Image 1 (cartoon, one colour):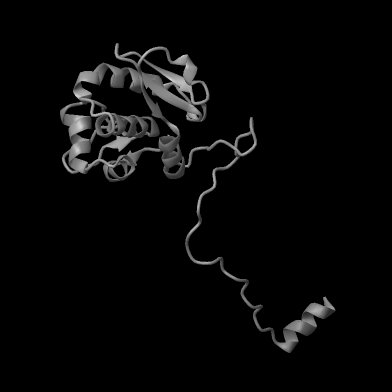
Image 2: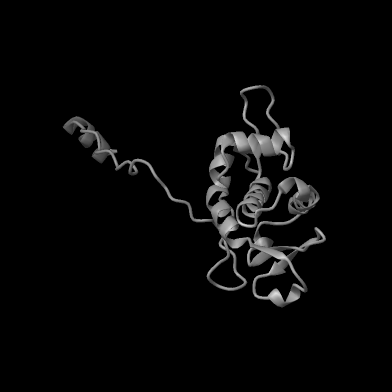
Length: 178
């Protein structure tokens, strides 16, 4: 499993490093997967934790929720994400009702939500994570997954074949006679 550092987690979630440390250490809303070993060493985060942090940012910024009051929902989501595959989340949304119960619902089936609920679409979050964690995206063909995720390749062009070394006429005659 690939884990990212605090700096990468900050970039992926849009949180400042101070706010990220506050949420994962001081307030312990969403703990890091690997806490820092000592002062100055970075914590490490899995895609599940980054996804949950991105959802928490959405809940705070778009819906103006106090995250401390929804700590139970965040803890339950974190536990569920540990046993959920990345691929199975494509085409889903998160629905949180006023009783602090949550469920995964299909994007195409919003009729499954009865009553009031906050709905967070996962597609934009999964799209960002699939690029940085090299996780699979849904294929253009239904029912088919990409074998290898597309990753940009950067760097110098591949080396060209080196010219053959110059051989003396004596060497060439010996090769012919052999």
